Image 1 (cartoon, rainbow, N blue to C red):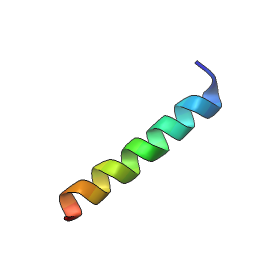
Image 2 (tube, rainbow, N blue to C red):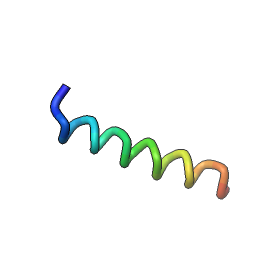
Image 3 (cartoon, one colour):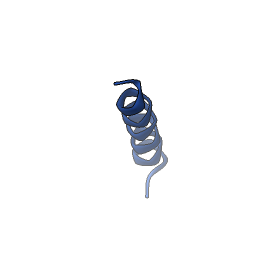
Image 4 (tube, rainbow, N blue to C red):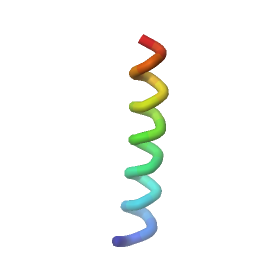
Length: 23
């Protein structure tokens, strides 16, 4: 896995996880 893909996945997962409980 490329570092860019991993970073993008972690970034998206972090945002999604933080936005979900906020609702």
